[in-house]
Length: 160
Image (cartoon, rainbow, N blue to C red; front, side):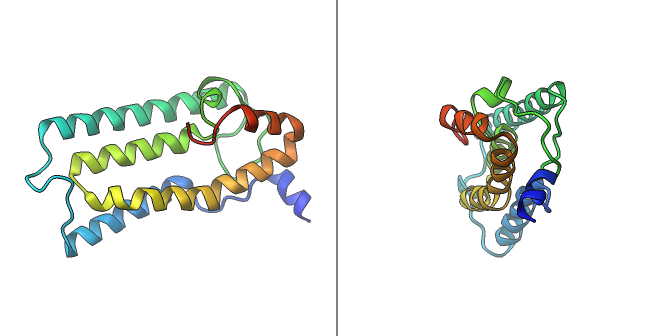
């Protein structure tokens, strides 16, 4: 049963961007009850600029990874079975460039909106994504690609 499930896909039921959106909404809700800012005098030009660069960089990594998966003719959907083990492009640097891109965007938004809560919640979001998404994806890839995936794991880090 498990082998058939692993062949069918990782079994990721909640779209990974949802975890970042939920954390952002939670941070906003917490902020309405107890203000927790990065800079008490407000986000200055430098902070907002760094945040904008982080958002743009995160989006660029997500797009690059998506294009790389599409060119390799495998799915971008984390609930579908991978048809190829992609190790080129951003996947030569990180095993999870899309999630890294979302995390970078989340951090950038936190800087722009001056949210200490978002900064505080980011590590928890990454732990949830690692446990509920990445672990399932990696089990699927291990099942499907075996030794090739093990070699890739030894060569490329999960995040950076």
